[in-house]
Length: 384
Ligand code: ADP
Image (cartoon, rainbow, N blue to C red; front, side, top):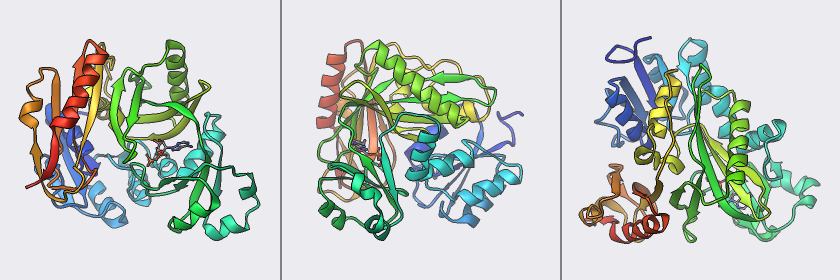
């Protein structure tokens, strides 16, 4: 199949920042790309060949959009699965597959999948509702603290709460949920794996994620993770096991906990480009976005190694500002010669909304981290 400068049409469900960074690759390779996103002001609106606004959870809008494409992928997990299944049965390729996405969309199915495939993960209990919880004898096994997770439609830590007692359940919304054992961890680490249909696999470096203590969002990603080589090798081995279990085609981000007693437990996976690998745009020969496109089209992947320290800083909306975004301090950030700034083009800012990121490359981790912290102070996203 000729993808380049041809009528081949790639459809991407979702037109946020991940879609925008995927478009930088399809634009580079001159691959015709259509996007479907609920927001008529999506960051991708003017950057793709055809933009359509529509509900990603609606069967008809996803199916109709997909019918006009040769291959469909997605940059967000919250999309209508039945439409993807129907597209696949009509001969339209969907990568990563609907089968994979269906499991990943639901934290209960995802955890069951890990258990079935002997992937190390924290113990958990599944409840359909509060009533189910009340009537269940399983709940007697739960120790506090533990972690409540909504099975569906959580994102960026929304839909995850730490419970210190049974009483804490009362402030949570009614929904299907899992309760997970609280994992005492040293670090949260991640990697991304690309695999094409021919079976070529490329594993990105193991990175560590540092969270903001108040918002509980990822604030910095450090590549490579500051862990010893044995632990890195173990994490890579486990991530490859996950990839194999899913019969992966496309990209798979694997988030893991490194526990206080040096065990590795898989937290969750995402079958799409992930915040933890944004650093790869500058730090790796082939970024996660290059690899997503190349793996779903079964093209040779090339390498994704990195030979410098890279630190990614998420640039989020300042507290207390909601409305049309104004970016302060960009020019000052550019005074550093090793900083690359990305702005996502979202028109409205909100407290903690991901509005952009910056990547710092350095031969010294200490220096790079210190610059990353300065960037966080210099760039402020407010309103006009
Ligand atoms: P999301 O899908 O919203 O990203 P996660 O399952 O990754 O949710 O959880 C968000 C964060 O909550 C994690 O990054 C971690 O800091 C914390 N967390 C999740 N599960 C556990 C657990 N079992 N033990 C301790 N902390 C956890």
